[in-house]
Length: 480
Image 1 (cartoon, rainbow, N blue to C red):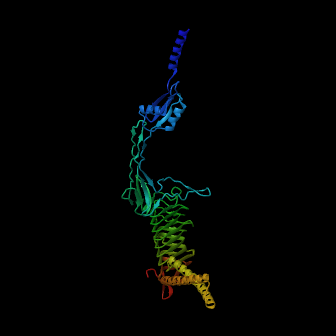
Image 2: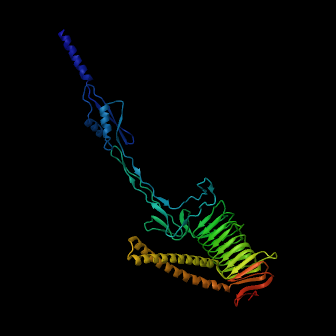
């Protein structure tokens, strides 16, 4: 019995030694070395895995970077042999960003009508012209970045690729800054990208018509329209405007000269406002305002013309009929009026704009004189109070001071306006030197005004020049 018990005890001891086992830490690394996983096997009667043991296992596998400490603690705490816990993570290299060009104008040339507040779509203003001023920034370069290197969990560096540089490709009428980071315009005009280069054109060319395909045009330079300006559309430009076709119910505002190859058919709608000269094959049912000359190749019919200097109608017809024509110096045509005694009004000797300035000056003069009278009456009232009372209250004293200042300002303004009025009156007096010339004839129904002198033609007059001489309106031979 004793020997059997001793044998059994030895077997139990050996069995206990076999079952007693310490915990273990197993480490696996991903193929790209960007992740390390820790698996903790719990002990069997032995010692559990400690943080030191886990860290040692990681180091033995070459893990040097990107430890996730809280995940190491969790793996040790949970001791789940079925769970591989991510305990180290590498840093991915961040490659540099390429340099880019930031355009300060729209490079989208697609036709995009604007939706209005009321839900309707505006097909007239498509903004195809990109206007820029001198010195305006056209493009800015955003420099490339170097990027940031990465690291594997085993401490191997992952080099970043630097971004590619880019250059601002610049064309005519632009200037690049010394550091090549900013492009500016050297003149006003239309900015566009052509062949990859940014350029500014002082002349904008439209090869077709101004219609729903182009929308209204608004340009700081000169505009060349190969086609026509169709009904309801408009062109505005600071330079010259040349139209290869016609103006058919469209309108224009021109800072320079206007040339219309095929004529202006206003359709009672066109308003032509030009600071310089107007040259057109014909003008019909339109309103024209020109700062310089109006030169017409064939006829002006039922239109309203204001020309700063001269109005000349040539060609085979050389006709002015209907409407009203006013110029600063001279009107010349072949035939004025018609056999049907069409009412036609002609006025020369006063630039319409001078007359308008004179009217405005007179109106301002009257307003300032009225204000001066009111101001002086108020000053007199306050001074009378001061004389009676010996002194004024602080608010009244400040009011008197303000009114006195206003009085001096009004006196200076009135003096300047009177000087301007005198100059304008001299120019108006010069209006008597104007002429109206008809190489063929002037028909009844034509009303003539030269300066302050007027007459209405009752009988046909051939080959005549109307002018003021010795204080009277006379008709002289055409070549007089």
